[in-house]
Image (cartoon, rainbow, N blue to C red; front, side):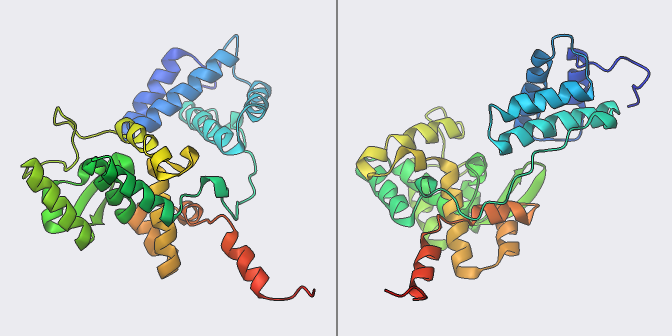
Length: 285
């Protein structure tokens, strides 16, 4: 779209056309919603809606003073995508430079022992569904949004076909997990559809799981800041990589198109590296 002859402004109609374009490109619904929020925030920041390089650099500075660098860059990506669609390439803004992290924060890393305590806490509360959800996510590495693809048929075949973010991949269910899920389906008297559903037979969503997981923190003795569904996926990635040391295959399993994303999932808190340095014995007493 070449609009150089027209005033370059961010208007509701322009945003609407861009979001329609994203839908036609089959972008994920959550991605489209985020782009919409980011562009609406930009429109609110610009009193007259006029787009210029100086105005956009001011917005970049505004974001940098309020958000983490990674968050700022996702907002700038929303902006640059919109500018490319409008044909205003000269207005694009460079992302912030971020030094690659080597370690993750220890207070955010869910350990295997903590995960097992969460599973046991769910069982102790009589919440078998939650216990199995935790084990399903952590033993397969799926996203919580992909839980709906774990169906009765997948339990029978040992493979789930997942369609997420415009990509399709196969998820393998470990034999021990299949045995537990078969027993659960038998108790629920269900032979088809998603394994985990609400009382109204709809696939359980992330908000239900998030709330139920947080309720386990105290009895499991795990800090609430570590307890959220995506951390189970991170634990799967770290465990797999510690055994196989194969980033490329792990990227395929997790559904990542960029191996740099997978590398983030395998970061540890640094405790292991610290112990290895200590064992070298290069400091004299």
